[in-house]
Length: 394
View 1 (spheres, helix red, strand yellow):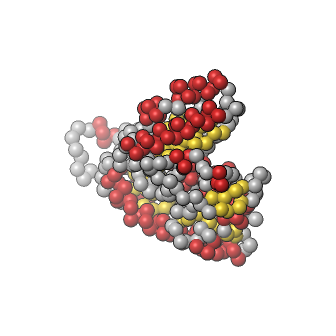
View 2: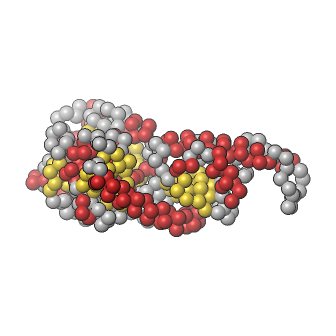
View 3: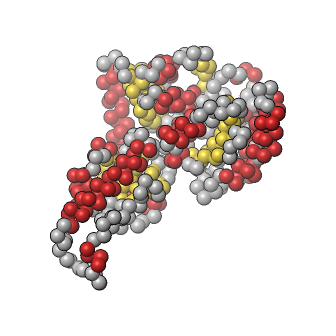
């Protein structure tokens, strides 16, 4: 599984209460060499640490301990579940008794710390933060004979093969019944109505895909002038369209080639999006609806007052959180330990006990729970606010 497949329904299912412990393992991976020797060593150490905690945790029943230790916390089992054909920057593994092991691969624009987490639910905040950081978007390729939909991020583009895509017309063209090519032929009677009917069907299926991601993704539409114009006239998602491109055979092009053509459009949209976000923060400050800095923003998110959370892509914070979850005390971020000795990463020293090193992930997770919009921006954009700011609802 990949974070591009994460939907509100899947997130809710992962977050359901489970018999203790629901184990979450997090680790960086090499996107160019999946399950390299370096990856295998780190995974082995994470599994070893999880088994150690199982053995020492008095809240784990003997039956659960044996099932997890002997059958599920196994590097071979995890490798078999992972997708070797779509490696990425990091991996999250979910392990619980009486459930199959789940492996999620994710794009990450920030360093990923190895983690072993025991809870009564799977922790989805690492997936969510990575998905938001990866700048997700949708691409709709329009063609009269076949329309395709893609889900993209900063590093990848995958064709959507559900919600009725790829989408061909349900009513065949009368021209298809005639033998041979029909060069320069005039459109038959009813051609325009057929195209409009087809595009309404495409738009309806697009709506299903949009709903899957809560309607927050920018949409880029590719097609010839006439079909673009016809689509804009019938679509109910016009407010989502962030850019367009002419169709040059891309309905059959590989996703890799399509991504290259999209790069200038994506860069232009990204620059505009960041500029508008900064301007909105300035306006919010004048209206008294602005929060700036990690401490102020943390409390605003906890109180569900944040309409939009804006975070610098490389921001890394650590701190202690009060029992009621409303107050954050920042501490120095511990230095990550690299191979060949990753043990201190997963077994923290005593002076760091009680310190959360996933503050950004928790912030994003809480913001999603409060139905806040989230935008990651380039480092330095929010320097005066300590790397994080928010537009408030009130």
